[in-house]
Image 1 (cartoon, rainbow, N blue to C red):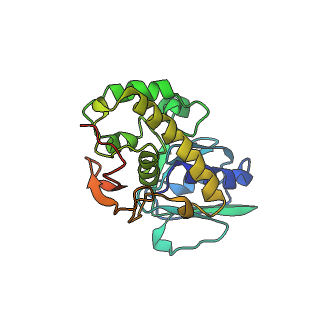
Image 2 (cartoon, rainbow, N blue to C red; image 1 turned 90 degrees about the horizontal axis):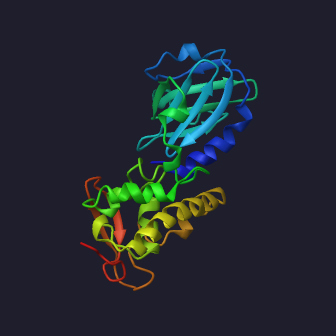
Length: 245
């Protein structure tokens, strides 16, 4: 699943289509894609793992789900996986195996931009308040809650928890205040590190925990477990990552 930093990269790459008119559309999305033809892109925005194409009369929301992807200029996957293709005079955007929906209304009223860890509007104090409201939740689930940490995915979850030496099954209400501060700070910091490394095509080189087998701090095997209600893969060290329960 693409995480917030990957959507930022898409938004930056697609800037050349801003102000351009859609000349051709294709794909098998459930929306009326023909209504998009002839409309001009007014803006491109992102919220967490969601990408918005703001047109003259409507907004298209792209959510990449677990296996979604995109390509620029050339279609790289079979027609059956193409949900939406937008062609312009200066290139094209293709979206595969993703959710495509029409959003009506003001995005600023529909989405909490203070929850987006990569947004200039990010509000750490609000994240702390939201965490206090779910004291019985495992931290692995809290980090993946898009209402609190929009844009954080499983890679960021595993790496941030390893950095701050916190066990993924720790209960929010039992975690010390100082460690909660570290958690909130690291969720955002690692997201920007992710963005930097992804742009340099070296993201995996920097992974310390995600998909790894040996803890680089303790030199003992990592535990691999599907933790919490989200049941996503966690990679962690039972020796150096403190568990608060």
